[in-house]
Length: 600
Image (cartoon, rainbow, N blue to C red; front, side, top):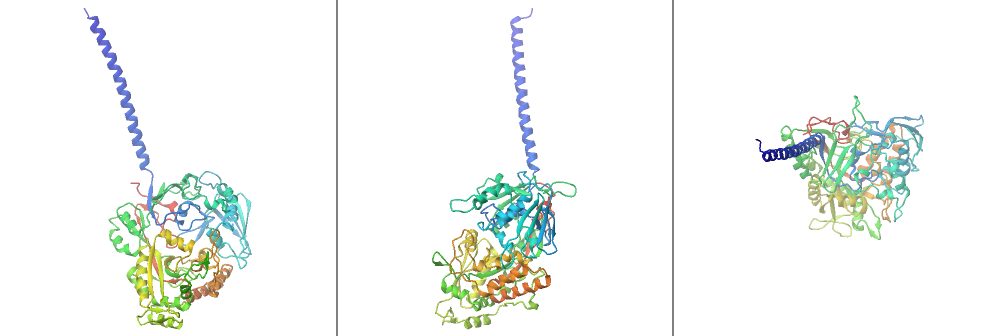
């Protein structure tokens, strides 16, 4: 007979075992699902294509109308009605076309259909009209852009009106030759900024001035360019993410840009950038001449290419602070030194006393050429030396003769003194993060000691350097990088005495403490007048002659003593395809066209 008790126990055991098997199976299934999801997430994360670049300067704002020092962000985030390509040509961007009236005073832009902001809202003619009428020409907003649209001797802005949702008409007070090029300035979102322009803060300034600071959540920053700002970590990095509403598509109808993400590592020091690039932490680096030989030997092994864009649209230069004004009762420049700096023979002597060829040979390894003009050699407006451009070759004898002619003298120790017996000594400042400028400052200090001049060389942090140049104006002499334009009017705000980048004799801008006693020299005003005249001249031959005269004056009176124009070189990983490095506008001007050959 069967043992009933045993049978009962067996059944109970079977049920317990079955229950545990069910639980175990469920557990295994859950683990498998988790592992699958993790692997799937890893695969998805792995296919996000990205490049890593370096940015030299910490941003101070993400407001495109107020950006000065960190304008590199605009390459990825904003576009204007037109854009400049790597050859310096103007082509359509947000506008698909434009028409100019026979009298050159009316220009009608037609926008592309279906444009959107990164929040999905339509981008229309209303945004264009708002950007120009409420921001760029607003006297309460100190944006650099207004310097490009004050037209003619009467300094009048164009009127801008909406014809319909896709068309905008600009009416100019007189013909303005560089106008189409000037409309590459960024278009801003009216639906975001309109109220900030109307409302005032406690100091009576438009709230626009404090909108989109570096503490703004990235999702609140609305753009129209190929990338949005995904995140910003102060002093570390800015991450850009592909804008899903960007308008551009390729010939096959694929959305651009092709690369999902751009990571901008904030690296002020050039040597640190070099180390990170060589270790594989960066996909791109500017190649200064100190690095060229080293990187050239590593090109194949490091799987990167050095691109040479030709002579850079920029130069190195020395400039003296010619401002005779005061702030809050204190002179910006010691009046004794201001007399030296404002003596043209003194500036000419400095130019003759600097061995520029030594700078080119020793610091730039010969990779560049001497610069003698504020207009780039690539420009059709450049005045060649053989056509009468004045050049200051290294000549200590000429330099000393000029100083003696101006009333300076030497003591028994060979020190240069002014007429009152003051020893000639001044501070030369530069950006401490730029190794080339630092090396240049050392050579200039040595050169000028041969003239009996004592130079206190003072490299400072980038933020201090920029603040003194654009805000406080309390500096004596600087060695710096300056732009030399292909289209001269692109840098008219350097030469017009009332504009925002007239560094050598700066006027207070909106929101800044006023300067009293500032004086504008006759030659200084003449250059500004000629720039106004040239911009209004539509005959190219006459325009060229006007700009030739500006170059003669700048080389005679030397507001900038131009030094060396280096080659524009960059190193880029070979996995990034489509690079068209341009000395005119940089490496990533066509970021929307770039592709990766792999995503590892």
